[in-house]
Length: 452
Image (tube, rainbow, N blue to C red):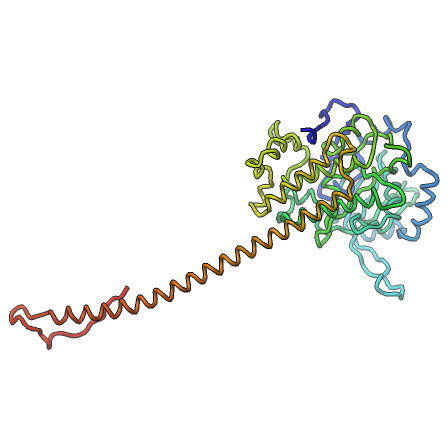
């Protein structure tokens, strides 16, 4: 099937090795907030000589810088050191190629009061490893972008720290804390609870809205370039937000169909035409989104080396089941324990296939994906409501039937008791003294009779 076209696992020298990234993470923040590995850093220097990152554009950088100061707070290094208790290992929530990520509490202006008062805010603080060669460029990318871009489905950058002293370069980023970790954590069972089917659909829609905003709703197009489950974070209400904009790239200028750039990303998520040619378009993100949809359906990773060889690549394994309605249920995450709508799952797989079309122009826009997901969610909710109503009606019928049976059995018991008493009396009347052959009234006495 064309929708399952997949690049060779190791044939292209441009393909990014994610071995460092996979080893580096400790928790969801490690995967979602770490930006680059040493492998990526070396490949950047190899392929990026003739390509321009969007932050290198003077006009674009000027545009971002004009707004940045008003939207981001500049923290001092001492503030962030205090917020993390001296970067205590007890507050470490992740570690990756970029550096370490700590949980902390900072003082920020109280948005609900106009008196200049401050309030405490829980944050995630990402510290660039100053001894490592990678990460500075990605740090600039995130500060430039998240200082300007605001959307409910993009993680909020609270502020940053940039200090140079005798200790060296200090580069830190301060984000809102996402309490429910990443989508990857939930799908891979790192948290005790299992995401319900309707929650998975809503998370997919939130992520699609975030990508749609980057692609279609801003003054300039932005291509995420590294969309995956570890970069989808969940807040306390399970609203999904995109994180880690270190590899984000400005889209092609008007009149151009693509951007030629170095190949960065994660194996299993990068679009094959991008991996093979370095030609980047917004449809590359759409491909990655299709992979994530299959992860939501199956509860499996895009690439899992611990599985049998024929099951390691999700898209190759899934195609054996998705086309056969009789086998489709074998595709669905078993941790759902049957608590899902099969029609909804099939529609989601159909949407994933559209996102995974071989030719980029055949893939839908993210705005179209948002609409399709909306209709799937509406249909699923309606289906669940009908099923619930049918279950309630069935339960009521059972209770009514049991009530009727109880009434009938009660009447029957009364009749049986009366009949037993009559028979018992007749039996007593027929009792005669064997010697005199007549009823011995003196020796006869009524007794208890079992009626059950």
